Amino acid sequence: MFWQKEIETLSRDKLSALQLERLGRTLARVYERVPFYRKAMDGNGFRPEDLRGLKDITALPFTTREDLRAGYPDGLLAVERTEAVRLHTSSGTTGKPKAIFFSRRDLDQAAELLARCLVMTGTGPGDVLQNMMTYGLFTGALMMHYAAEKVGILVIPSGPGNTERQLDLMRDFGTTVLHITPSYLLYLADYLARAGLDPARDLKLKRAYVGAEPYSEETRRKIESLYGIDIYNSYGLSEMNGPGVAFECAGKQGMHLWEDNFLMEVVDPETGRPRAEGEAGELILTTLNREAMPIIRYRTRDITSVISEPCACGRTHRRITRIAGRADDMFIVRGVNIFPQQVERVLMAVSGVAQNYQIILDSYDQMTVRVEIQREVFDGHVEHLIRLKNLIIDRLRSEIVVRPEVELVEPGSLPTFEGKGKRVIDRRTM
Ligand code: AMP
Ligand code: ZN
Figure 1 (tube, rainbow, N blue to C red):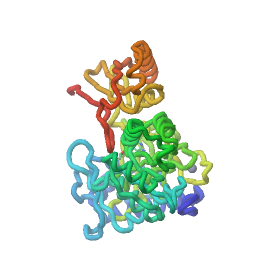
Figure 2 (cartoon, rainbow, N blue to C red):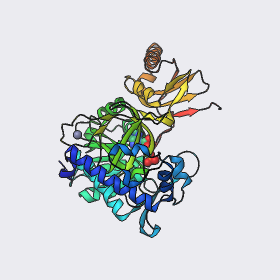
Figure 3 (cartoon, helix red, strand yellow):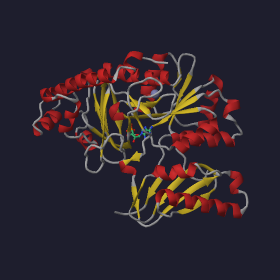
Figure 4 (cartoon, rainbow, N blue to C red):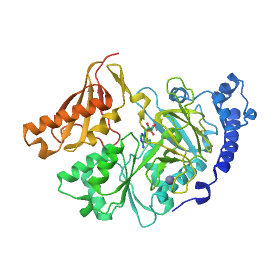
């Protein structure tokens, strides 16, 4: 099923031509209206009319988070402030937030993109979507909310938290679709188990859209089997509208990135140089269809690679692989680069492991992984626990090279998350 079949299946040639035309318009617009970009182009001796092909974009500098922060509150606006109708911010961990403005047209367009995602994964009128992302300054919930309404889906704007009430809503209104972070979905699975509920028997869930933070394929499989539903990976960031930038189709082999709205590049996160086709690196995005706040060559810090092979679903927009991690989340132990997700991947594939874990960094030589164990296992034989612990250590060592300390802990003993999780506790001083 398609929401906008023509544009979703546009030939590659036509799609590239459309991208070039939109890129040209975007560059002309920001050159004229945004001093930050005019300066950047002048500094590189580039004028919008010099644009001949999509590759020419590499002549322009990147836009970084720091640039957005420095422009706070409205430095990068390309319209009068009176033409903007919505503001979102993305806080990050330090410093000033990034403010993102949307015009009426931008919001319509953002909803169109997410509507494509909903319909692509089989959601439509008759479905009931419980929107368990945070409403407010964060883009996640509101963008999905309006897209689902546009498609004609009943939306329950529950937001995250208050798990007992969430369950009541699911049961009373027959929720079929969830929009949720992986951290909260894992927590919810645990909660259901403790309440003696079986999702397949007691709920009407069919699928969940899961994103807003990295998670592994192993976690997807684990959640799919715990709930007996389909999990679709949903990628986006506030700077680029929020959710709906890239989304999995029914094939679940990578996420289609809507190339009529975003131009993607993949570069070496250290040097900024382009990666060869298909190689992993940092995703760089340029908005091609935004009015209020176009952003050129944004460094997402997210690590992925492009899949150029055609997809069985017929959509021509290329896919990106599951985000391997954020360049900023990577940590180093004994000189080895490690992404939290590598640890997660190993843990979620071990039977006996429950849903929650934590990584503690006390020194540059040692990391400790605390992992919750299923109740039966935790209360069982000590020898079994020792075997399990050694198994986890071995598997982690072969994945991340470093041999971690592993502590098996009681289910429910680690902090839980209703939004994005915080799993790495770094106690090292620089
Ligand atoms: P925010 O600034 O709060 O909109 O968060 C956006 C960031 O969340 C992205 O840059 C990614 O790092 C992360 N993110 C969002 N969706 C996913 C996903 N499906 N997989 C991995 N990371 C994601
Ligand atoms: Zn597809």
